[in-house]
Length: 265
Image (tube, rainbow, N blue to C red; front, top):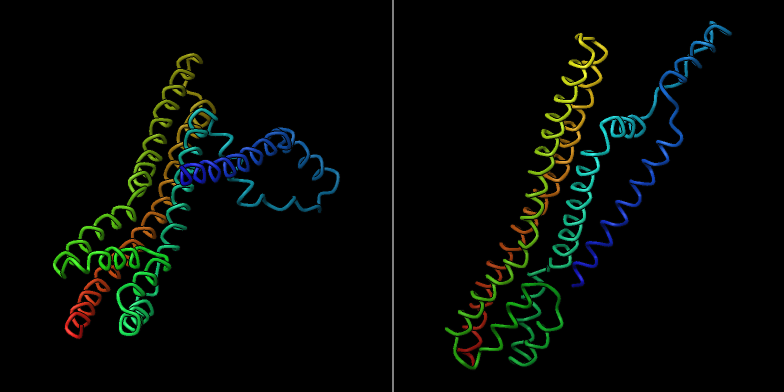
């Protein structure tokens, strides 16, 4: 429930900020014809006057987003917001799950030798991360034998791996949906362009260019969404792989440590 609330909160903030930006752009944007007339008038008044500087990338991006039509652009924007919200939540979770396993193993070995199993349980219980949780589950079954400890470590390790990978499938879904919705918008835009040509009764370059622009913009933004989310997805997979490798390596060392402790006691 906490994850859902956090996810919805992040998505709401992102959607609210982007929507306000787009609305402000629509309210403040001048028609292309008015801007052209202003430039022409300024040039006629002062031929040496240089035209205004080009629009920034952010302004161009917002204008192209508005020109693409709100029907599919809004859906693509929602896909981006949800994908980023899930990605941010996963990155935060994986960052908090990262543990300095070398330091933990050194402290655990020292605690075992000085305080025994109970003190080692306290250390693992008070340490954050999946590695410490796996160690704690193994120590809970130490009195049942090392075979039971090993089974607990393997079983709980699979559970923790599943927790680390949860949510990644949603990001891959959003990566696929972005271009698919973009292509759908392109097809619908092409149909609208052909309808406009049929209504005009002539293949006018203006009609064709306008319809093609609107149709292709949805595909461009869909691909942009896929690229952004793909980078985040690969980063998340790399984090998961690193944590899982630490879990496996540290579990082997942990079992060797318990074998040596059992021989001494």
